[in-house]
Length: 250
Image (cartoon, rainbow, N blue to C red; front, side, top):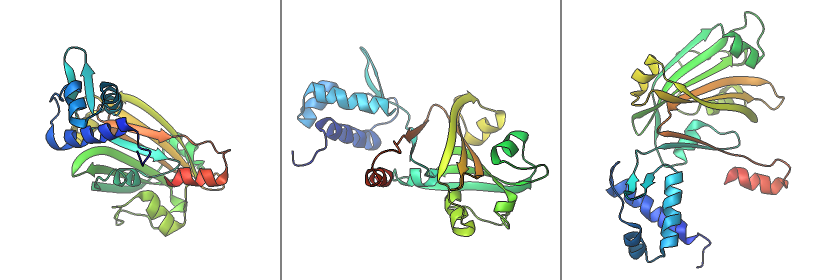
């Protein structure tokens, strides 16, 4: 082959397009033998492609029952420090915001400690319901020290990435972040707002830092655990600078 794309990945792409256009959740895919005939490949190649589709959450294979199409999943994929908006746009999807709430508040002890705030220092708190193709996907919370974002108030419209807004309007550029990902039971509020069918949510908490290691933002994403995948690519900082730059721009 002239290009270096593995044959199984071509079958993967072929099946993914068919799943997106021709199948509904619960539908059975053709048998592996039928797929091999359609794609003019071997059973081994087809099995590898289906295994990849299963790993990505698009299908589920059961012995004696075949391969079933699953409910579409949202994959929030990051390389280095990047935003939710950029991640979703990178998948060819259309992110938007149903509503935004912005208020100035006294932070919790946990957030105050994370952001290194002194007593009586306040934060700007942002809550948004994010959509993909007009479907509720996640609740998003961002909290920044008020002294770093003067004038940030409820009149601001945040249609784009909040990180882009902070960079363009306040010169705040995140260069590193700590993240924690875990699952828990959803609250009644989350079930209602996100229209959850499963009572379990995935929680992604992040603390973002400036170049001088100052924490400038604490965030949290809450999404349905059965349809949201968070993927992060780890990079070895000791590699050659040019290689590192290429990895971050892929």
